[in-house]
Image 1 (spheres, helix red, strand yellow):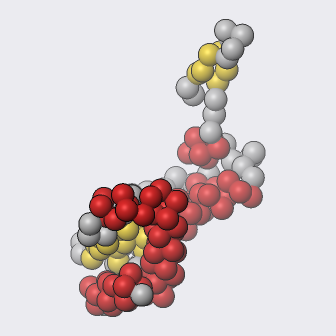
Image 2: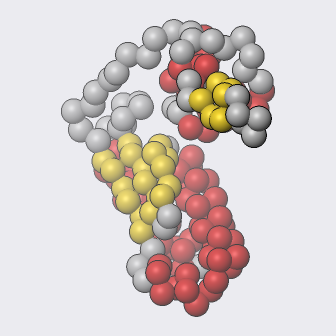
Length: 145
């Protein structure tokens, strides 16, 4: 675990709850830590980590990946300022998250102004490309709305 020097000169090992889970120590995990794990990892991975089960890597031969990026975001955020930009992203990504549940598109991550989702990875979806296309159409309506 990383060590940090305290004001009195001594060092103190800092352990994060996530590190504890990844190392198999789940005894001190609180409900809020459990919720966080379910937000960060797919459900089956979070549950395996919490039960101390090893998570085996999986592969998929065909997936559809979607990147939603805001065109002109840098200039838009300059005009809006930090607070309004943050509010815009929060509203937009909350809507995208709801759409992802509706269309069964798994949200991989959001970084800045980019929302990333994938289909046919965590579950078999023969219509994975169509799901992403429908999601994208709905996302554009939400963004314009």
